[in-house]
Image 1: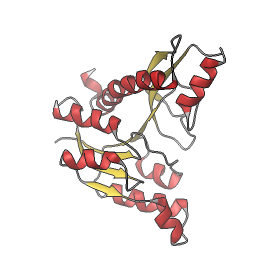
Image 2: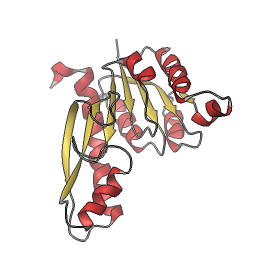
Image 3: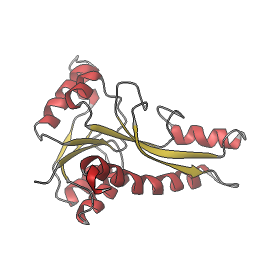
Length: 200
């Protein structure tokens, strides 16, 4: 039986599209059962709908407006996601730090895409920070990793990593484009490695 994947997104969903494309080529190791967004305007929701994948949106603001906490949000999110009994939860541009209320529910089954190498540039704006360091002459390369999610941000065990060079004359947009191209290759590979470890 095909393994089930739930993908969490916040934005345009280009990495989600890479997963959808891999699924359509039958090279993902499972199928995407649900796409979740914490932003109602996320273009990735349209990508999911176009591919016939169910979507669910849950905004933090709605919870805050009801006087609820981030943990309440994460608990409700975990309940909704668990209804799909996922074998794997993939954070693909998900811009909300998950608390143990969510992580503990899917322990060892959550992976995250991060545009930096292990031990470097943890947290938000990693590409901007890498570019700033490059322009100051203290960085010549950055990278991409997919790692298991633990409560400490971007510190879980890496599954796959790849260096991305910073090149003379790069604009921020040039570096972003190079990183995103690597992300689109690395994320589907990581998903398959986790779901079908014997196939590699």
